[in-house]
Amino acid sequence: MKAHEVNFDGLVGLTHHYAGLSFGNEASTKHRNQVSNPKLAAKQGLLKMKALSDAGFPQAVIPPQERPNVAVLRQLGFSGSDEQVVAKAATQTPELLSAASSASSMWVANAATVCPSADAMDGRVHLTVANLNNKFHRSSEAPTTEALLRAIFRDEARFAVHPALPQVARFGDEGAANHNRLGGEYGEPGLQLFIYGREEHGHAAPERYPARQTLEASQAVARLNQVHPDRVMFAQQNPTVIDEGVFHNDVIAVSNRQVLFCHERAFVKQCGLLSHLAERVSEFQAIQVPEEVVSVKDAVATYLFNSQLLSREDGSMVLVVPQESQEHAGVWRYLNGLLAEDNPIRDLKVFDLRESMANGGGPACLRLRVVLTEAERQAVNPSVMMNDALFNQLNGWVDRYYRDRLTQADLADPLLLREGREALDQLSQLLDLGSVYAFQR
Image 1 (cartoon, rainbow, N blue to C red):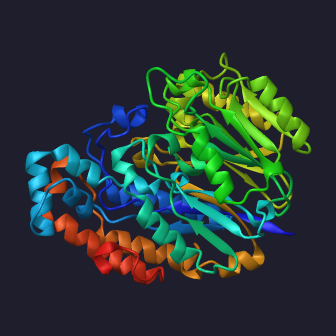
Image 2: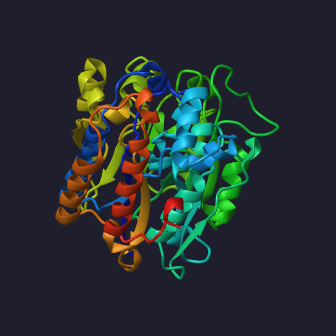
């Protein structure tokens, strides 16, 4: 059946700031305490969405979550009015206010793991929300993520949205950032490759940084998503590259249809894995980047593999990379050489996403890939689909509500809480989401 991949991009939130909250994410740590520009961050993301939509790649929007998360602060013992809760947290434990104000939900590659209907035993599109329990500042996202996805994928005859796995280390789940789908046409059955960093009782684990995704979580997600057992493979990420800053698989590999673009050190027993994929995926092609050409360090610094690999109607592919990849002489030389080689990649698109990049997320982090048939696409909430009108409306909304300068100290401003709620209330109406935020109920 004919289908297309739709990229649902996360809209950067009003409290986007640099707090270095994500241990293991070197870009996040490096830019800690710098001044952020939430307005620019949101507009950079919108420009990418609109440019790709105009180029013929379907785009949609996933809105930000409410921040600061007052409910979490109350769980931690702060009391009084919402404004008083924020003020007390700012005075007593500013690091907790920072975590409760994180705008990291913009990285919707971590929002959920998706199974297209062609791969599911019940013929529906499945989305399992990620629990993100490895990091406190992300562990509270799941309930709102679930509400947002249900507001977007409303038709239960075509879509199934599953709650997050239990919030325990054994089932640490980071969503689609550790998931690949390989195959031919989007609408045909594919092979789902789940990547994990550790298992409860098993292989070597990284020593410096945490392995966030577990094998047990990946197996549970595959079950929830009703992926046909013949269409599932599990592979371990190389623990040594996790220790070099590869906190998710999408920092070291990206797939699209029959192509897997990855670093030569991405996986444990990589040669064997690629051989198995070649046996199971028709016309499979692995594009491996050698360490001597682009080191893991340079790949992490430029987010070369945190790119989007998109298919045109003629079967050729476009690689969407961040500006940092263009500015690195060695990486840019490699990419231009790639276009001349025997593979489907025929074009490069470069985007300035500096505000997101400085917090540790690039083009691939900002999007959740959902394969949809035309009938399924028509069943998606139409108000979130990117077009000229929505682009203009969202830019006007950002101009009205977003600040162009934010520091951790600014998080204590009670106006920020009020501005955020007013903004999200307007946004939920604009996107026809209903009452998805706690303050609206």
